[in-house]
Image (cartoon, rainbow, N blue to C red; front, side):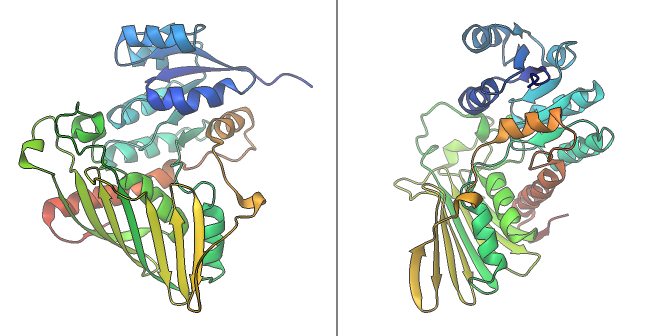
Length: 342
């Protein structure tokens, strides 16, 4: 059997998610190597290369990684504010692009990425998927399609964390719109998941707040908590609750209530439960053939090597769909009224 075609990766951003998830996944694939790395500083890029990718060249500018003659794939692990510029430049230079989630810092930037990708259909593009619901999501969607709970009418999601509760803790890039853009807490992650299971959201209302007035300053301008009312195209109504300042909070959970019963998904242990009018919530065993898992790096590399292979998901169109909802939430916070998801 012949060896797979060698592929060379350039990293734009080499932080925690790259080290924890992408690097092990890519290292496990034959014929994949790293050629260039840019991080927040040249020193940090050099430290990454020494520890994780000694074959790669540390560079001070991300543009030099993208433009590197020996880079076939640009793997973007930087913050959302850099995704659009790095993606568009990489496509113009003939490179395949994988970008970390969320798709972009704004809807306008996401639209620019999508438009650029349409000009280079031969190049593979993809966004890092939300890991939430990977194990049982396909089976949950099948149960919905089969009418296990009848027509869904109400959805409740809560995603609570105490991560930002301590006002003396070091600031995080996700709390600053300068780096995070319009992304708020886990909103974009769960919009991606819910639209995959229930279809597109068409209208939202939203309210948000800060745990204390002293928290809102030039360095912290992303809300500490967020409440969203959403309407899906199929008429289902949802209450989506997010917090980074919830002490002793339960894990992330979802309830889908329908005319004939309820589906419950626990994102912590990936368990799925079903209850009907006449029975309580019971664990649903997900068939092995439907159990999903983390195959992100393998799927992307396979698509680059074989044009006939499935393209990675979420693709840029799906990313644009959740970015429209995130943008509508931001507009609803500003206007105090319901906003359509354009």
